[in-house]
Image (cartoon, rainbow, N blue to C red; front, top):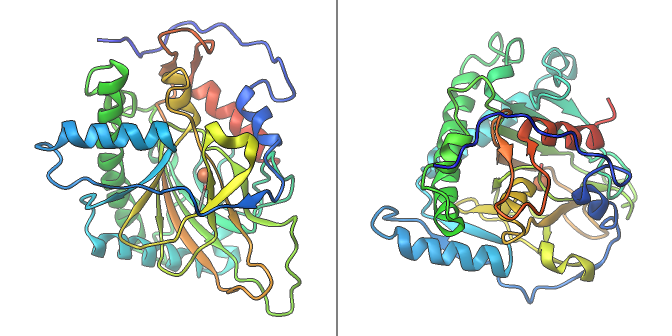
Length: 340
Ligand SMILES: O=C(O)CCC(=O)C(=O)O
Ligand SMILES: [Fe+2]
C-alpha cells in the first residue's frame, strides 16, 4: 500500500513568476486561438460498472491519454437529482446580493459565495460569473438555512453522489498507474478534517442586449483545474465551454463541448498530472462570452473538483515533480487566482 499521509515536504523554491510550471503554462493560454470540431469527445458508458470495470478502464485510459477529456453517460446519478441540484443552485443565485454576501467566500478554503473575483492568470480580467462553493469542513455560517431550508441537504447529497462517481473513475486510473484500487478514495476521504474536494455551483451572467461583446472578457478564462478530476454538469442549450488537450496546448485550437444535461464532462486536473508523471495530462478549458449574434442568456453549470485531502503528499513514482502536500498545492493556485 502506498503511503499517502503527511510527512515532511521540502519547501519548493519558486523557479518562475508563480513557482509552478502549470501556472506559467496557463499565462500563455489567454489568446483567442482558433476553433476546431475535428476532435472526438468520447462518451464512456459507466453502466454495469463492477462487471465491466476492466473494459471501462481501457476506454477511460485511452480517452484520457489520447485527448484528455471525455464524457460519462449512464453515470449513476439520476436525472431528477441533477435537475434538482440545478434548481437548488438557481434558488441560491436568485437571492438578493446583500443576502448572498452574508455567506461570502472564505479566502483560501473554497467555501462560500463570490462574484466576479476570480481573475485567471491567462487573461487577467475577472470571470463574468458568481459561484458558490461547498467544501464540507468549512461551511460554518455559509448555509442560507433561514431562506432556503432544503438547500444544505440537497447540496451535501449531490456532493456525495459526485464524489462516488469521481472515485469510481479514479479507481480505474489507479489500476493503470499501479496504485491499489482504493488509493484515490483514501486520498479524498470525506470523514477527514483535511478533506478539500469542492462542489461548485456557477452562474455566468446574461449579457445585456445593449452591451458590446468584448473579446478580452471571458465567462471563464482559459485554465487547467487544480484537482485530480473534475466532473462538470451542464444544461442543454447553455453552451460556451471549449477545451484544448494539455498535450496540444501550443497549437491553441479549441473544441466546443456541446452541452447535454444527461452527460458529465470530465477533465483531468493538475494533481493527477503530477501523480501520474504526466501520463495523464491536464486539460485547458474556458467558457467564452456570447459573441455577436449569439444567445446572450445566462449559463448555469455545476462542477465537482476531486481535490486530494490537505495532508496528502502528491508525488509521482519517477520524481519528475518535487513532493508537495495537496494543501500547499491548492494554496498556491488559489493565491494566483483570487486577489481578494
Ligand atoms: O462552467 C463551466 O463550464 C466550467 C467551469 C470551470 O471550468 C471551473 O470552474 O473550473
Ligand atoms: Fe475549470
